Length: 133
Image (cartoon, rainbow, N blue to C red; front, side):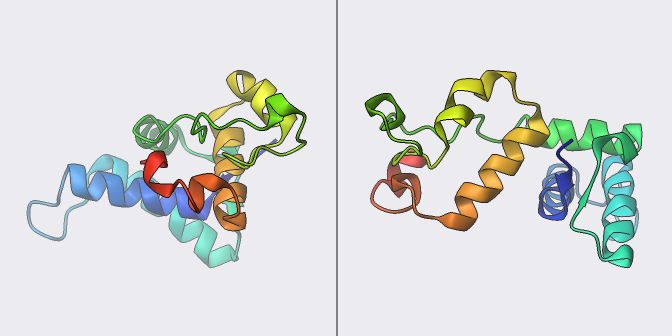
């Protein structure tokens, strides 16, 4: 099972902090509080990700709400897997990832996003970065 990476927990925290700022700079919204507890546990243990089953329900709901605000697919309509490439030059996904994308869980999709962003070789991140926006 694919876990939820610490950078996604952090991004979700920042999303909720911007969406619902603290009224006094001290109080946390329920979403931020739930996600911050998970983030702190990851930092404390030195872990990079948490398994979805280990995420408290409130934190999972907050994470999924953040996830819903993210682009679903890295596709930029320059698909070289349809031409026989094992890895798409446009988005950076493998042929199998392109074919199975709709079946992937949000966690699996985010894992692919992290990989292609880290690699940064696809046209999505180089020549056609403006198209990806």
